[in-house]
Structure formats: structure tokens, C-alpha cells
Image 1 (cartoon, rainbow, N blue to C red):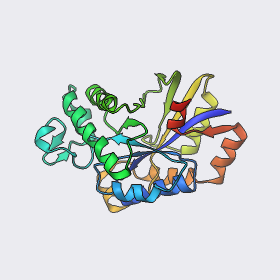
Image 2 (image 1 turned 180 degrees about the vertical axis):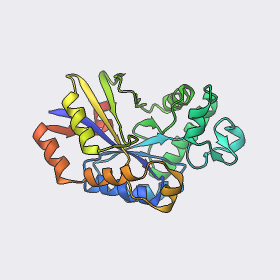
Image 3 (image 1 turned 60 degrees about the vertical axis):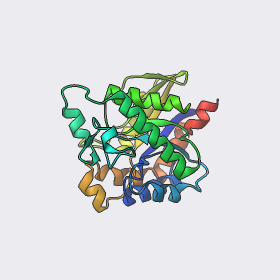
Image 4 (image 1 turned 90 degrees about the vertical axis):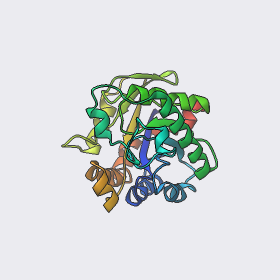
Length: 252
């Protein structure tokens, strides 16, 4: 049996994203979901999926979409006007101008918001969109404050030591010729013994908010369709793949 993590990110981003994740969890193979608690549709998103017993829900720590939980004056390196800076602004910065302590406080506030929405602490914590050492370190600080497991991701394809295993992140949705089924098949074919594959998907449907605020639209539709398909179920059965919850891995 080959164990893999299949994660659906961005719960709360928009209504369309919420319904895509609902479909991918209730009818598909996704059993780990990252929630963006600062977004307007977070509470609605959780209400949609809360009765799905197979789901492990974590915090998708966010400093690049929507508004911060904390007052903007206390997180000034993370905001532009009253909203978080865009992910592009972080990428275009010549240095890591994110303040680690501001991140720690904001992500701590997001953890508390997560608890307010769900009634429990996140089962894990991971990062949304921004590649910044200080974002990562500050988020890990906040996770440690609450004894929450931080799940790293290396988007270059390098292995990361995590939970006594070699974690390999698989996400190709930003590629122009993206085909999610090909991505999955290639990852399984190239997997080496001892590697734990982390498939990161963003299933969703396009609504006006997503269309006007996100560069990732069409791949979400593709993923929502594939992750619920008989084709993916047949592949996983034939290759003897088990989709595992992150919290179950941590308890082993």
C-alpha cells in the first residue's frame, strides 16, 4: 500500500471555491482541507464540509489575500492600505521585508479565528502562496505556540524531512499546459521508496470574486472534476494507493 496526502487548499476564498472543495471531499478523494480563516466565506465554507467525517481540516496561513485579522497598524509589513499585500508584491521585493514577529502575531490570530469557526484547533498548519523565509518562520513560531504541526512544502521538487519521512510536494497547477491527471501519474511513476507524496490541489468553481482576484481559475475546475472522477479512483485502486489524513500520520 502506497500512502499519499491529497490536500485541497483555499477553503473560504470564495463561494465557488467552497463548493468545489465540498464536491472534492464529499464525492472525491480529498480528505485534507486548508482553510483561509480571514476570508469572508470561511465560515460558510466550513459549514459546508463540517459533517464530512473523513476530512482533516488545517489552517492555510495567509498573508496575501483578503484582510488581516489583526488591526492593520500592527502588521504594517504585510499590508497595503487595509488589505494584505498581493503575492506578486512579495515576489517583486528585492529582500524579505516581511516582519517575522508580525507574522507570528497575525497567524496566532488566525489560529484563534480558526478555533472560533470550528470549535477546535487546526489539525495542521501550512502556508498560502507567499515564498518568504520570515513568513515561514513566523508561521512556525505561531504553530509552536499552540503545539500545532507545521507541514512544509518545497515547490522546487526537493525532498523535505517531515514526520520521520521524506516529503515530496506535487503541485503544477500554475503551468500553462497543466493536466492534473498527467501530474498525478508522473508523480506516482517517479516516486522512490520512502517518499511521501503531498499532492496540493485547489478545486473550485469560478465566481466573480475568484475571477477578479486570483490568477488560478481554470485549473480549479479541472481539479474539481478529476478528483471526483471514476478515472482517479480506478488509478488509485490499481496502483494500491491510500489517501491518508495528515492527523492520522501524526498519530502513528
